[in-house]
Length: 410
Image (cartoon, rainbow, N blue to C red):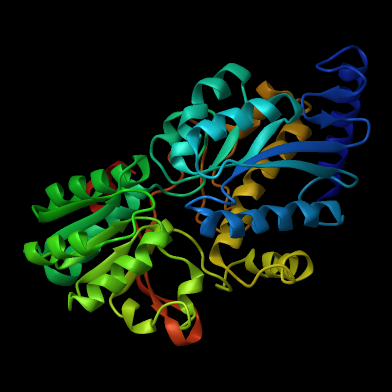
């Protein structure tokens, strides 16, 4: 951090300490979730560590803990010297009612939610977040989270990914291509379905089969048979990884081999392990995402990998969702840093700092995002990747691009 920024931060801290001493929120040098005297930031986290999305939730958990431990070790540059983070994690098990209950348990003790995992477990929080002016960074790419001021996304949406998938399918197979989709029967899956429908209409492409999947569904014979009978050649997967493996495995058994196009949550890095699923199952799998992959040549990757080696490698093998968790957590820290620098770390000050985020690349790990206005639009650039199973990495099949139907508007 440069000397001029350090001077600004010291002046802001002096001002804040004076406000708190005069009886600001909480008194005794404390605002909600912030201890100015001891330089402690308290953050809440609602995650799925035991439910149907825990295969993603657990590495996400590792990601935010790596970031917070990196800050607490000192010298990260992510917060001014001397600041540390305390975090309160609750496991809602991907249950919306549990999410609400656990929010009510912790909201008064934290400045913001560094993470709210899952679309169906974040949307019910919106009335309370507005009431409490509580910022919550969603581990969700749902368009609906981005329509609420208090749940800013940090990556393009499921809808955008599905639109990009249609563009790519048309590039590969022409406008006569027959599209299909298997989508989770909730807001996440609906977002992917709507994106597919919008872009298919733009290209004049037929969607021959739309198959809804219940969360936790185990048997995919009927789904695969319907897609196969309809002749779907390119199939969007708006599903969680717990469904991806069984669905693709069922298709292999039935001799059905379309091109599979997965939303971000459809993949899990454990799929690289041949002991988990035979690599041949993913022979026709493509990943439509904005996310960086593990070890990719990006400006912020080395710093992340160093933090992983120090604070996470002993607990968990490399996983792209560790990186995702780290990125989402970094977003909250960046907004707090900006609020601290401005001299206002109240909930209102945090929101002002959030709306000052423009063309920020998540510390060199992503495409630039801007969160100046609502509804948020955290970028429109997504790409198509193909897994290189033997090397546990990815090949870029089609580089970053904006969906063709709205390219002129962005």
